[in-house]
Every structure is written in C-alpha cells, then in structure tokens.
Image (cartoon, rainbow, N blue to C red; front, top):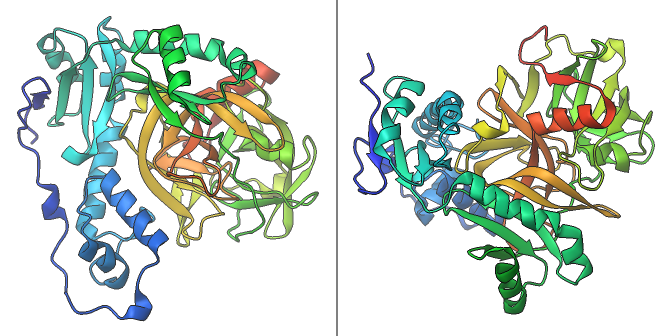
Length: 457
C-alpha cells in the first residue's frame, strides 16, 4: 500500500523522502579504454546533456562507460544507453508525469496559480507554483495525484495569467518589431523562473532595454536565430505504415518523419499526421509520399502558414496501407511501441521528460526535457512563418526529423516541427502539441481528427 502524498514547500527548502539519484548508477570497471574507441565530442555532449536533463551523474568516467560498458549500460529505450536501474527510474517518472493532469487541472482553477514544472534533479517531482497561500492548496493537490506521489509547492511573484498577458502583448507586436529592425524569433514562458522569454537574432543591450520598457519589464532574453525545419534525404524501412517512420515525396525528394496515426472524425477515414511544412515543401496537396521507395498515400492540407497555432499536415493513406494496429509507432532500434493516451498542452510542464523519433538522427530517438512552454517562434524554409503555440525541448534535431513522433512512455505529446539552425550554438527543438495541432486544422479546414490511442482507433 502507498502512504499518503508527501509535500515539500519550496519556501522552507526542506526536502523529504527523495531517493538519492547517485544510487541509480552502479559501479563499473575502470580498465583503460582503447584510444580507438573514444567517444566523439558530439557523442559525449549528447550523453552529458541527457544525463544533466534528468539529474543523472555526469562524470567523465561515467560518460565513457556509457559507450564502452554495454554490459552495465545495456538499456537503450531512451535513445541513450542507461543501466536497467536508470531506465526503470525514468519509467517511474514517466508514470508520475502521465498521472498529474487532474492535479494541474484543479490548480488552474485557483486565481493564484502560477504554473507547474517537473524537477528532474529531485527525481521527477512535480512542482506547483502559486503567488500566495501555499498550504491552502496542498490537500487538494494531494487528492488529485496518485496515492504516495511526491510533489512540491512554491511561491512566486506573478500568476501564470500575468505571464500569458505579457507574452500576448509582445506577440501582438511581432510584425511591428520585425519591421522596426528587431529580429524577434521566439517568445515563451519559463515557468520555473516565473518569466517571459524573448529571443532576438542579434540581441543588443539597447534592444533589451527597449523591450523591457515597452512590455513591462522582467523579461529574459536570448540571442537566437529563427528555427529551421528538419528536412533532408535519407530513408528507413519498417512497414506497415506507422508514426516514427521516414517518408519521402516521389515529387522532389523531401524527407520527413511520420508523427502518428489519427482518425478523421469528419469522414471516418484513417489519416497520418506529420509536420505541415513537410506537406508544403514536398509539393502540397495530392503529392504522393513513399516509405522505402514505395508510395503509401497522398498529401492533404496543412497549417504551415503565418500566425498559425500549429504546424501540422495530413497524409491520406491508400486503403491497402492503413496500419492494422493503429496506435503503433516506430520507437527506434528495431522496436515498435504503442500510444495509449495523449497529453493536452496544459498537462505538459517545464522539466517533463520528452522523446522524439526522427529519421535524420543516426540514433533515431532522442530524449530530454521540456525547457519552455507556450513558445511562439519563427519557422523558416524558403520563407519564414510565425507558429504561435509550440513547446521547446532540450535537444537538437537534424534534417529528416520534421513531423516525428513526440512522446514519453506511451503518452503522445505532439509533432516535431523545427529546431535551431545547423551550426548555431545550443541544443533545442520545438514541437506542436497534439491538441493545438488538431484544433488548428479544424479551424482552418473544418476537418476534425484525433490521434489513435487504441489498436482499432
């Protein structure tokens, strides 16, 4: 039996009952590693990035052992080698993440609510922020979480509504700012630090001062170029058709990734969801798409246009290519997994775990955490389009990943849409949440779809 939920107030900074993360990693042999087997600097950076995201030990000896001791670091279910104990711990966190929706929904009814985030350094603990009266919220949050689930509450200065209002005022001035020479590329909400984030390509102190003056102050700034969609030339092989697979147009060799299978509720047919800019770049409506050099369906309409809520598009598979098990997706390393639910945007918090399938990556699957929520940014192919509602991830992508499945465990979270430009600093990418995707599509075209979360859909 589980005990009652335990809560830790951030104001007191007292931590109760958290397992030691250091105990997750076992000892490993310290035999010298042959020079010819040394990790590349990029491999090391990705291992370190992943382990930092989830609060796992990141010493150089462990980073080396991840690659060179497969007898210890034998689990690849998160795209990076982990010990079985580490993978089991991340599985446990995924269960907590999937179960917190009711608690968030209740917290959103409080006028003092300031958002939520997940503290991976403390073992994937959800944190609920309010502007006052912390203890008055504890019992209701505990009731809404699974028995025994740990959580924290914390006090900050501004409500989430206040942050959204400040962000909305900046977003409303987006085009005017660009015309005035301020190359704004992104806005988002940093829940943990209780601030609105603004990215500028070519940030200066003068620009930062101007925006703080114009939009109420306390902004956080990044010097960051516009995002680029991830399309290139490569292919995979894993029929029947499902999310997570590489797809290529027969018209112009545009390569992307399928996101997930969905039911068109308007006419009852099965459709495949990918990134909208993939449909546009691939030639548009009616263009055939293929997997492993064999056509499976044709492109439909897409929402990659300026000031769109999401960047999604549909592919209509021919009847012979409809997947028999409609909630499956390719999960990397030759494995197939299933989607059993999807997360609404409000259920996705800063610090949550997130993974993405993409055919442009040699590892196929990348995992990390959510870095920013409610992100508006520029997505540039030949032209640039402003996408209003995305979520930022802590890891980069490459050509071919666009449209890929964004998930955690068996929970679908969204569709990968774009990432930082190749060669620029940092590691980050964005996805369109599931619900913003289907609502944007319905508003634009009157077509309703929902992701398949059962085999028959």
